[in-house]
Amino acid sequence: MATAVRQSVKTLRSQKKERVESTGRRQRPRHVMSIAFLALGLVGVALLHVWLRLQVVHMGYVLSTTSKLQNQLEQENRELKVEFATLTSPDRLEAMSRRRLGLRPPEKGQVIVLP
Image 1 (tube, helix red, strand yellow):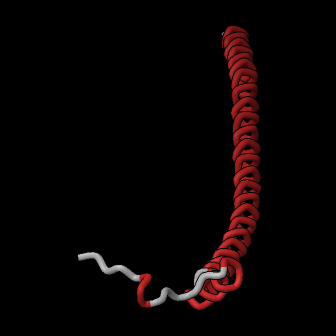
Image 2 (cartoon, rainbow, N blue to C red; image 1 turned 180 degrees about the vertical axis):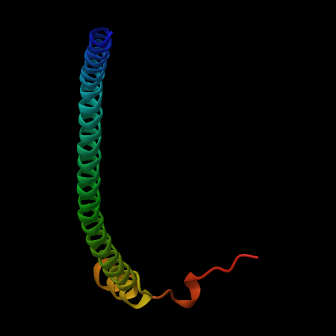
């Protein structure tokens, strides 16, 4: 009887060992795979973060360049407005018309007033 009990205890122990080993083998790859997917996900998030930071820096450079260009164009616009006002002033136009075209103010008989 003692040998039968020993034999059944040995059998139970070996079955338990097999279960532990078989379940341990099955869980390890799942565990390793989950860690690998987690690491891959973290690497992906890190790469996404770096890419976004590079995009922000690039857009900053573009914005700075555009702002400088806008300031230059506004300055040029102001200068052109001053030049336009100078060139179209009545005194300058009168002097140019007298000098280049020989125009002069009309005499009394040359002006006809229409009703």
